[in-house]
Length: 461
Image (cartoon, rainbow, N blue to C red; front, top):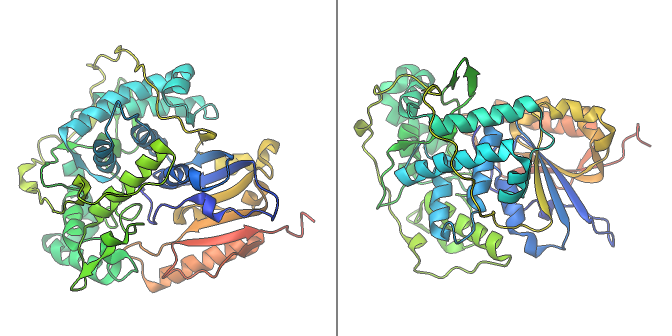
């Protein structure tokens, strides 16, 4: 799960405050958020809300997801003197969702992996280079795992992600592999396109992603290098680092987080029932707005005619990639690149009164036993995959009147009516067990989120 399946939201829009009593410090627990999209969107929209401190506490099932989120936050917060706004947008999009990236992008990943290694091993450098992020609550073994992941990105030149993608497709489609165009068309027409907003993902870009793992393309670029950040399950094995390969999504795509809705409604226009712009164009505009607002702390107003107004789909010939070139995913640590390069001497964009705390992967079950976090969180966001892992123990962590947001399965491809109905039942049962009251009716077919409010339970009275 390298990305979420609902549009990025400003979490402060869902904050429940008692009339006349503002919350000076907002503590938000993000459970399996996957891609930091809600964190970035909330930080970008801070100017719309009363000034307050915001602390995000992030739990992920794998350290790999935390590693990638650190890189995404690093890229998003690059100062303008280090990275221009337009280049930052496209760089972020490639790291976020493209299995193959441009050479400058893979060079950026390798360069920043050096700095990320320094960050996780030197707390003072982390405080200087990326002051938004805190790792002090993580366990030593998870810090080591982060370092291994960044080391894998830095050293690895043999990560044959194209071959891994093809293997995943063959296993998923089985006998349908030789007729996969028909399978892709069915999933798009009967599943994704039928969802409200799903039609904003252009069929050609969806099909191209299903075939190649490349979601975002531009006319003047070619994606030729593996995106090392998709390596899953990086482990130290003797003197080597090994990865279990690519184990992420191969059916939905990275379009939903930023690419199906936009404040600029001209990007959502249709002609003959087809959206004029691609999902990639919508995402590019959304990120342009987000990064501008992060940098300037004020509303973005788009000027027509910019480079992000271009339209075009580049279909890269997958036959140019030799899927048999490399069959191993071993990082050659026995011949490491020089990591003694100097630490960067500039800091990320300063986001006042905000911090992102990465938590141990086991926090979900350990934190309820800690008095420090009793009634601590004003808001909880959880992904749809986390629902089955949550019990009544979560209630001990959140204060009365807190908002609880649950990601919907509205856009997920391949889910039938029965499974969708079971998901709704699970959400409603979870709310009932914990005494959460709905803030609005939840329709899984139209709503991206289920929104609840914690009320005082009988046991607490």
